[in-house]
Length: 217
Length: 220
Image 1 (cartoon, helix red, strand yellow):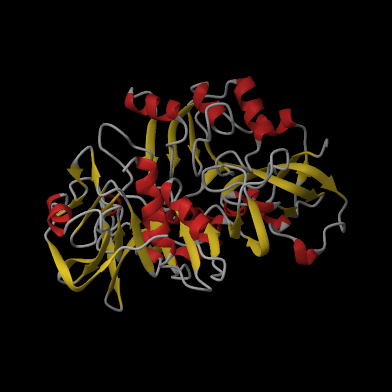
Image 2 (tube, one colour):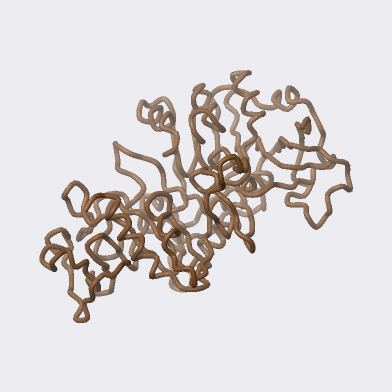
């Protein structure tokens, strides 16, 4: 079950060179306070797994602008020109993965699976170096699970045990990432007492959550 | 014909392909315009790959919600009957064949239905985002594209840019006409009366078969 901690205590768990997955989609549902604190502490040489790199002044864009990322694993970087510039100058390594594959790799890591078979990427550069498996006459790529040391998740509400509720399209990559890291740190807008969230409305069960920050609002 | 007129013709014509009840994913950019031209009596549901069904128009100024955006991060609304879900569920909907139609742009498309729309090596590498999954998973894949780029054909015998997906495109709609991808290659089904068949073929690298029921491409 989860522990409520200060942002400083949560950040102490992230070191230079850590592999971190960060929730959000074009800076919607991104834990901005955790990112601001990482910028302030200048934690560097990070490997970051996320859908995208936000826009220059928002979301993961702030870590890009401050050159804290060594390797970026994402599905789309087109809306942050600085990411493309750093990639072309050789300052940043970027690995691009189809969105449905990336999220399922993350989910597979959290769900204890050894991988999955997807038709996405067949006949494209995505299939290079991957095993192909035929099932009922259809060809699939074997994609492997992708976990991380740390997941940074943004929730709307958390109870003190760590049950989470997300709001609108801010949910996106947050629930699968909450399953897939050794240490799951949640930034919640509001922290409520145990019992205040209807068990039927819980989107991420407390079993996945380690640390919670926030609740100031 | 200027760029805006071309885009209007293309997206108005694609809107006619949508049927009542369809679940549709529209790519960012020109494909998004298709949503503006769907006839009122046709009820479609737009899927937004970042995690919801029932994508609605942009909110009034001042009514933006920080937790609600489209796949480009722009503020949008959700319609009654819509639903939110996480990205894994979103791509179960997409890859699992539950999206009826997807409309995407193209850098290149070829006579086998191969599509390239996610990178130009050494120049532009935005990434594939959800496009590879959408093209593989959707029941019908419609390409919305200007017929040529800087006077050069985009509809080719064979794409030479990195592919988004292999042999998945069903229909190509340009300002010149409507082209179906078939086992026997590309069939020109409709033509914009502003052009001759010879002009359309001239602007297309792949060989077009002219449908024996060639129709006029009509948009209001």
